[in-house]
Image 1 (spheres, rainbow, N blue to C red):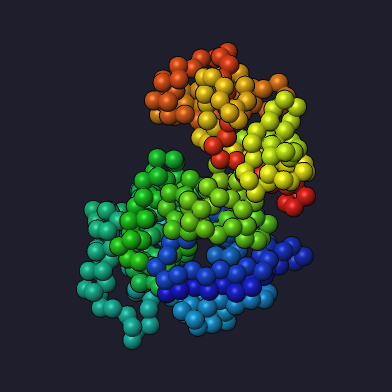
Image 2: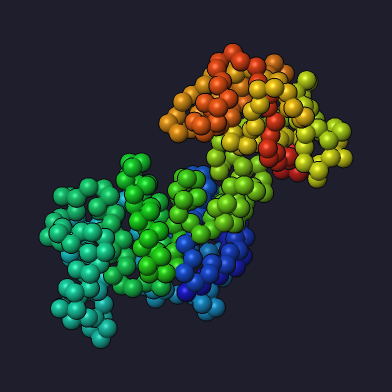
Length: 356
Ligand code: ATP
């Protein structure tokens, strides 16, 4: 089922929670709504589910307007951050619930329900937990029950609101891989809300980056990570070095610190801000064209990755570079060394255009 969101806006009192949101989600896509707290992710999800009505705009499922339809008539499965399981019901009854409360005409028989529920519990690897109560499960197991329960009614759209937000990092990682696999097996159009950029990059087909009730950028994980359209997206999607300076003669300059800028800004003269990801900083032992001398102030060994802090007296902040362990050993770096750096990829923004 495809989903079209057309010019949706929503106010709570005088607060604009969603502002002119338009988005087309293909049938079978897994889309992440990513943004900081309060950016409108949950509000948008609730409008799609019909739990909230928009002030203006339209929602279409497979080209049919469903804006005025009751949540129950939208064929949507919902999974929340806080398990929302019925505490007094067993795992089996929780998963069976949506099928048991169907109108008599469409309700499956008892044996059909049993077969279906056990099939889903096998899928979420909880077939031996059918008779347990939610309180007798771990957080990760409860979330798997919540997913099985949402899937039981065979929804055409699956909406997940920070589904793994309350779990520890290791379980989160395991469950998000597992969500991806489940999605690939079932091909249900799915939208999940997260404020965790790593989770969105790891799992989603496309990421919708939200800020202040608006969409900042829509794209594949690779697009939004490597080609952010705004400083906000750059900052939100991972570590970044920021240089403030002046564009002049094809360089971004701050005192003696001067780096080459992309051709698109070769003739601009303006105050500007350059963004470089730590893994896009090239480190050389000797000066080559376009490099700037800096000093290594710290080295952090983080498993397979090594973070190098670099200082230059004309910039206040230190720069952070990231190397693989192999590169690090090859270069034989140590604290106090002078090295030469240049950005492999630099993105330049003019502050006036972005209100930074
Ligand atoms: P979080 O990650 O913290 O859940 P979010 O991006 O999902 O944030 P929303 O929950 O959509 O953000 O909220 C967007 C804004 O709308 C917030 O400032 C919130 O306080 C406000 N808001 C949401 N629901 C209501 C409501 N029912 N009444 C008043 N304000 C609301």
